[in-house]
Amino acid sequence: MEITHLSPSPAQPGSAGSRNTPDPLGEYSFEDMFTAKTMALEKGHAEPSPPRAADVPVLPHGPVSPTGAAAAYQRQQENALPGHNQTTQSDTGWAAYKDDQLLSNPGGDHYLLEQKKVTREAPDTFISRLGKNIADAVGNIKNFFQNLFFGAKTHYRDEQNQIREGQRKGLIGSLIELVKDLGSALSLGNWRPDGEPEPRGLSERMIFAADKLREAIGGDLIGGAGGSLNQMAEDLILAGWNLVEVVPDATIGNFPAGRKLTTTIFDNGQVAIDYLTDVMPLGEAWLRVHAPDLQQGEMPILYNLKLPERFPEDERWHHIRNTPFRKKIETVGSLLADLLTLKLAGQIAGSSEKRR
Image (cartoon, rainbow, N blue to C red; front, side, top):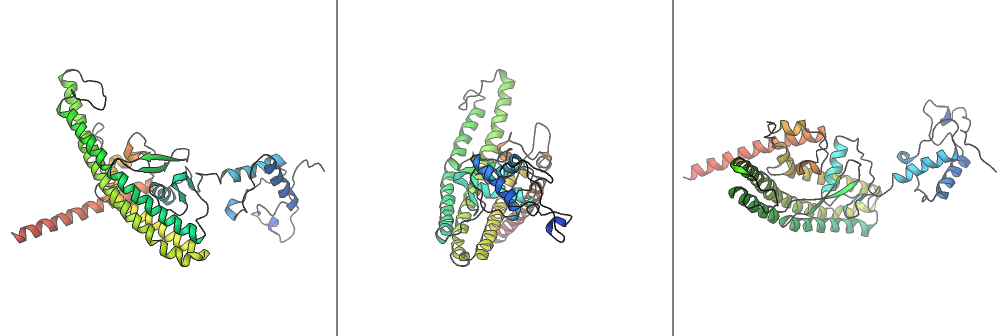
C-alpha cells in the first residue's frame, strides 16, 4: 500500500481535536504515527524512549509528508544526545546559573562530568544512587588536591551549548607564576621565563615591569593563590555534602517521589554552597565583581555589570554565562560579604585593643 501523505484524522465533537488548542497527537491516527516512526528507524535512528509530554514532537497542521514526520522524530532523538540539556543558549536567569554551577563541580544527580553529558533521568537503582554520591565525593576530594598543586578540571557550556572542559589555577602553580612574574618585573624584562618579546628602551621596560607587577599581584597572588584556597575549601564542603546525600538516597530514595525530592534538595543545596563560596572574599564571583579595567578607566562593580554575557577574553569570565541574573545576585552577595568582613575585622581590632 503506497502512502502519499499523512492527513489529520477528523475531529469528533467533544474530542481533543475540536478544542482551540489541539492535542499534538490527538489529530493523527495510530497508523500515521506508526508510519512516521518506521521511516525514522529505517534511516538508522534508534527508537526513542516513550515520550513524556514535554518530549512529544509537535507535527504541523494540515498535510504532512512521511519525510517531514520522520524529521520530527529525528529532532526528538537529537535532543537526547550526550551533552544536550533543557538549558539552552538562550536561557537566562536561574536555569542557566544552576546549570553552570552544577557543571563546575561534581555532585549534580543528572550531571556526568567525566562523560561530558547531562542525563534526562537521575540514577534510580539503589547501587547506582549510592555509587554516584560516593563517586562525586571522591571527585571533589580529588579536586582539592589538584587545586592544591596545579589546578583541577572544570566544565562549562560554550556558545554552541556543548559541554567543554576547562582548567583552574592551582595554589602551587600560582605561587610559581608569582615568582616568575615578580622576577620579570624587578629585572625590567631582562628575565622573561614566559617567553615575551624583550622590551626596548627604558619606557618600554617600565611599562613591561608595571604590567608584570599587576599580573603578579592581581592574577597570581589574589586571583590565583587566594582563589585556589577558596576553591579548596569549597571542594571539601561539597565532598561532605555528597556523603550526606547517601542517607536520603538509601532510604526515601527507594521511592520515586523520594528520589525526586532528594535530587531537588541536594542539587539546589550544591548551587547554594557554590554561590556562598563564590561571593566570599577571593571567591570567583567576588573577584569578578571587584575587577576594574584600568586601561579603560572602568571602576569595580560597574565593569562587571557592563560586560556581555560571554566574555572569553578574560579567564575570570571564560567558564560562565554572565547573565543579568548572575550579575545581580553575585554583586549583592559580594558587597554583603565585604560588609561582613569589615564588621568582623572591626570586632577583632576592638578585641585586641581591649586586651591591651
